[in-house]
Length: 456
Image (tube, rainbow, N blue to C red; front, top):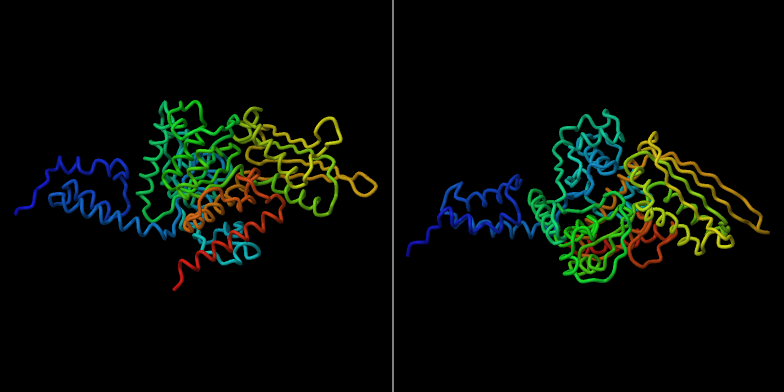
């Protein structure tokens, strides 16, 4: 009996769904690309063999994806100061044999995590894509943000130009936007079939939201005006089996998102990256607590002149960040600073000061008491670079999340509290010592998992 022949029109209707889900343009894997073309009758044959070949190849790729050794960073807010600096840092490693980035990664430090010998993905095996509302290429974004001088990235400008920057999709309903985001994620993942995608939220601070328990159906059928873009990005990532890092101060701990991450076994962590002043505040507060010195007051002032600083000059947008900076102190010390006064003496201010640009300056005035309640004081002045401090932490977190995802651990990863001002979930990792020990604990757990799965 003669085999039934498929016309090109029928071939197109046959594969419309796979094309919609995965995308064809720019597919790097030659075998999958040829399978699609065979189905369309472009390479030859009647298309039937191409359909069979597509099913076999995609199954083969799905199997190999369980042991991916590369990372695809998906950054929301990729053209911002932090996002573009992350791109430059990775570009430096991939294109510069003398790059010094590794010495600034905790995951590479012989004194901390590296002594556990975890198989972290090499930074040279990380690629990047992302979203932004600014219509800029990555080199244009780096130049506009003025974080790095041109000589620091001119040697790999061509590589930076190849980084794909997508637009945030439009729509009236949350479900419409999430579905479009999912399609974008599928398409970009298909172009990097040997990479494990990791989503990082770097969007600007928004007005705080108060989450209430509601069904996923209620969220999906709501207007996009009822929810921040952060939540839509995050839900789309989890539904596409992409681990989530929330590096912004925007709280995305919606019950629906937490539940989905547990159901889908997708790891999530956040909120609000701990980069400069708050990191040193954690270290010092831990020292005061360990030494049993009573903190009577702590005044913190930040000035910065980048877009983050401008955004935070709006009190409604800076509320979450100020709350996170203040809460760190009380969590470590175990008491409210200044409780004997009528007004709080744990004060945090953030001021926009354009001349500083990305060079943040922070002052801390700490009043503390010793025996006989005798007063003493400590002054600290930090002149830091916000994005330079943040970028290596994001790369560290991406390497952690890739291993955690490979180990099939889902939900909130509390052990990564070290990296955040306001860590997700209920935990007791507050002091510097607690958070470092939690990282060691997580590292040993992942090491045991790796040894079991790679035995023999």
